[in-house]
Length: 128
Image: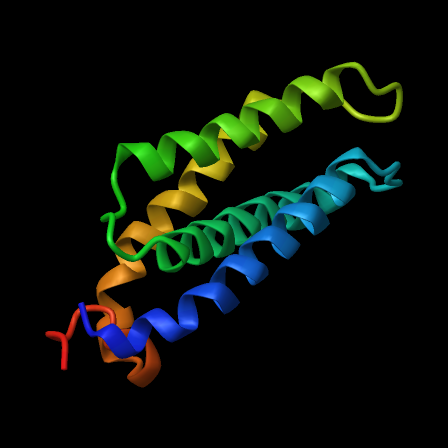
C-alpha cells in the first residue's frame, strides 16, 4: 500500500461514521410511502450498503474486502431490521436484508474499478 494513501483514511472513517448515523436515523424515522415507491426503497437500500461497503473498505485499507467486512455490514442490516420490527411505523423485511447484500455484492463487483480512480488507486500502489 502506498503510505500516501494513509493520509486519507481518517476522512474515510469520518465519512463512514457519518453515513452510519444517517442510515440509522433514516431507518428508525417514520416514512409514508406507497407500494409504488417499493422499487425506490430497494434502490435506496442497495445504494446505502454499496456506499457503506466502499467507505468501510477504504477506512481499513490494510484488510481486504472479506467476510469480516461483509459480515459486519450484514449484521448491521439485520440489526436495523430487528429494530424496525419493534417500531409501529416500520416492519421487518428479509427482502430489505437481501437487497442490502446485493449492495455489498455490487461494491465487490465495482471494487476493481477503484484501481482506476486517481486518489483511490494509491491504496494498491507500492509504498513510496
